[in-house]
Picture: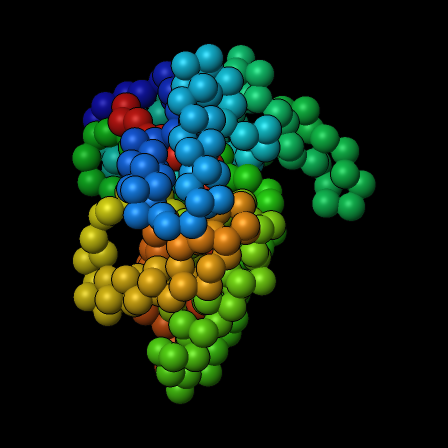
Length: 280
């Protein structure tokens, strides 16, 4: 049994908060540069150049990529041979988010109640998901998820008889409805199967995949490729001003479901796709 102190977890989370908001991940940056090389629309090319330059300035000057520094989504793979010492894992994570957003001068965007709208001024609580896995390590994945793209996300509970064509049409329509509001070029996370709540989580979880990674599920891998092509044919383009680059990637996370169910959730992510991870 390995002991990990909560202070180490808090420090790690704080660092991830800052790095995610200052440093655009290499896979996203490569995808933007690849899109720029392939783009034929002059306005779209100019916007992609600006996004790439913005990421460079943020990294160099240690400032946020976007003024919306997001809400904290934390996925934890907790080894079954790890003992947490000094408090609870949940408190350690929230303390880390609080510290990171203060230390990094990141905007606090969380309100304590959805109706009275009073800011917590700490950006907590974080959205925490914990999986217990074999081993004696803790793998932490952090995402700073912006509110604008999140607001454009949708779920639909299809009948089990729904065709691939119907499902694809729904997903493409969600992107069309989002338009410029979600700050394209986008990354589209899709949860397929499970239950009402599970599908939504699967859509969010899929966004932690690296751009360019291959889906292990053959059906999903094919659909990802087809959907990306169809979404980019919409012509929405970067910033919604036209072009061939409406999305950089489509990720699908399937899960078994009831014979009477076929839930499909679409979680949209903006071009400022801020994900970092660490292993303790």
